Image (tube, rainbow, N blue to C red; front, side):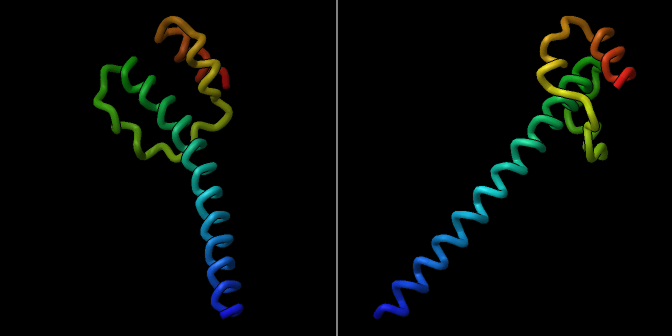
Length: 80
């Protein structure tokens, strides 16, 4: 009985750690996807047109959101 309880606790603990790591990765990916969506909207392309881009590099979503025009967004991306 004690072995079953320990085994259940071990599975629960491993599952909890596994899920928390996945959530952190989703947040990072979501920021880059949001940046790609903003850029595709500026270019007039369908969303998903830049799915081949794997990383957004040093471009920060918060900075992109502060910018008012597509031209300024492109200048920001070009300089980073």
